[in-house]
Figure 1 (cartoon, rainbow, N blue to C red):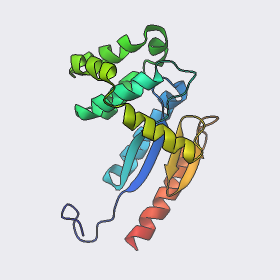
Figure 2: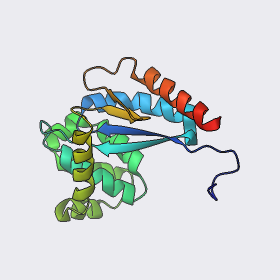
Figure 3: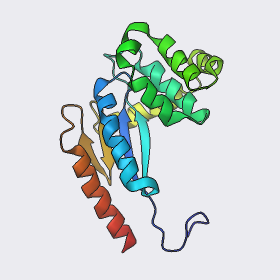
Amino acid sequence: MSETQPSGATEPVVLDVWCELQCPDCHAALEDVRALRARYGDRMDIRLRHFPLEKHKHAFAAAQAAEEAFEQGRGWPYIEAVLARTAELDRRGEAVLLDVAKELGLDAEEFDTALIDGRHILIVDADQAEGKAIGVTGTPTYVIGGERLDGGKSQEGLRARIEEIADRLLAADAG
C-alpha cells in the first residue's frame, strides 16, 4: 500500500492520449478528455503522449513547448490553449507558442530558450517512437488497459468505449 493512498484505494486507470498540438481532431477530442476527467477524477490518470505528424510543421515545436509548460506547472492549460489555436499556429508558427505561454503567466523567455536548446526533444522523440512501435498512425489515439483506440479517422463512440474499459478495469481492481 502506498503512503498516499488510503487502505482499499485502487490505482488510477491510465489513459494515454497520443496527440499533436497542431491537430484540429485533437482539439475536438478535448471535450472527451474533459468529460473523462470530470467523470473519473483521480481514478483516471490522463497522460499526454506526443505524436507530431509530419504534415504539421509546427507540431514538433509545440510538443516541446508543452513539455516546458509541464515543467512550469501548467501543462494541460497550455495544451488546451494551443489546441484552441491550431489554425493560428498554422499561420503564425512558434510565435503562437510563446504568446500562449505569456497569456498563461508562464516564463515565455524560458519557452523560447527551451525551443532553441532542445531540452525536451528526447521526451518528444521517445513518445513518438513508442507510438510508432504500438501502431499509432494518427491523432488522437488512445491507449487504455492495453487497448489502442484510433480516433484519427473518427472519434464517434470512443469516449463510451474508453468508459467501458475504465469501468471494467476499476471494478476488477476494486474486487
